[in-house]
Amino acid sequence: MTHKELIGDESATNAETLADWMVYLLIKFLNDLKERPVTQEILRWELLEGNSLTNELANVRDQLGLDSLKFLEEKGSFPEDKDIPAISAILIAGVVYLILRTKVSNTFMGVDFSSPAGWQRIEAALESIIQSTISTDSVN
Image (cartoon, rainbow, N blue to C red; front, side, top):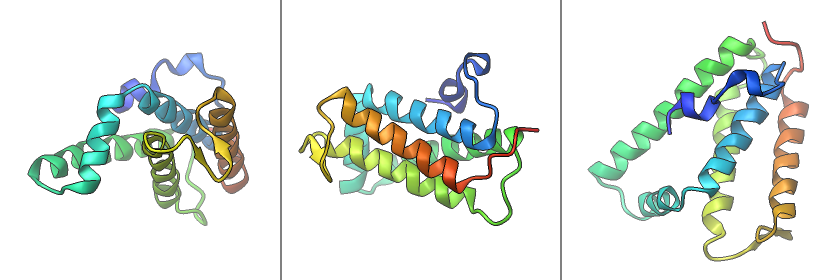
């Protein structure tokens, strides 16, 4: 997917702050990746085998992340005391891991991923982490 596909129709969200936009993009990414089993298989393959094709696919995905960060910077200044790219990397990696893990197990740390309620818990946790970590000043 491209960052424009990830962002979608900006008017369809009520995001006002940098944190709101981060939550919106991360949850949209999570839900999109859950619906892309082929992409999940490619990600699993990349973890097992590094070659020119998997490296190129990783570069394309990294560009999506970088483009998304540029978009976020347009929505609100990154707090100087917060490393937004690193925070984003950790959260995205966690989302990817949980989604990939569901192929071999429906639970992790007591969260049941076979039901919508389990994923809703993850979405709420992501929102809580982002909202408590990132300044809640309004967008520019």
